[in-house]
Length: 283
Image 1: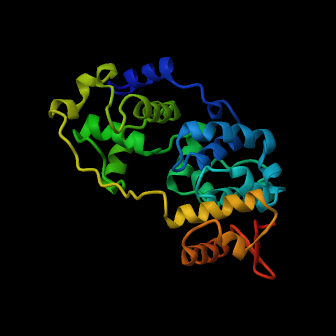
Image 2: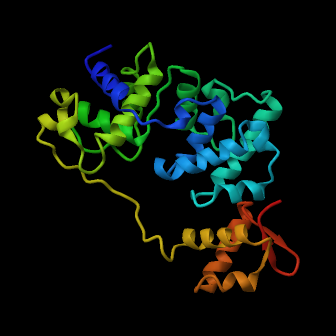
């Protein structure tokens, strides 16, 4: 191990959280990676357990209806992820003998899987040497190596190349998990616990005097947004077999926003329009 890897991996061995997807099947890892996209661990944890109890393999999920999948997704947000996971499960069950493929390039061809998710599944499910770069990992290495508080919004080719050189040839999956956990628990975005950092002496950000980086965030009040409107409609349809358009419009103060949401939800195949202006979850 190099000077950076050894103390972080040692810290991880003593301090890692007991998360169930760290000791599960490749399918369980895949489900966790879909759920953890833009959703924190504490919200994912109970939902992941429910899903794995209900659908322990890809073939089990493949047999479910879209309505069952969207309903089970609950309030995790971005329900298109649920439909993409369902579609990926159907392909895995039919084309891969119910086994999650280990190769990153093959994973990339599945619905809902991008570069990061493919690398993470390959690493955490199959212990392959891949470049896993979530925001926690990027922040840790940006601070230690580059001396900046926050990474750029998207990794550049230069950043990817530099980070790939740090990935160890042996136990690369442990390095990925350790740096990710370290960023989630110690080297956090706000108020990092620098006094607990085992690599503080190597941290270029500390040596530079902790300079602040202007972090541009896309933020908006959740209340009143199109996304909130869509979520309200989907939740109502989870709780009812179907609803008329007039009933749905009573759920939200802006009628034009409801009409827009109904159109986009229908286009995204998250709901179905029925005769007589009724809507339901897709069957």
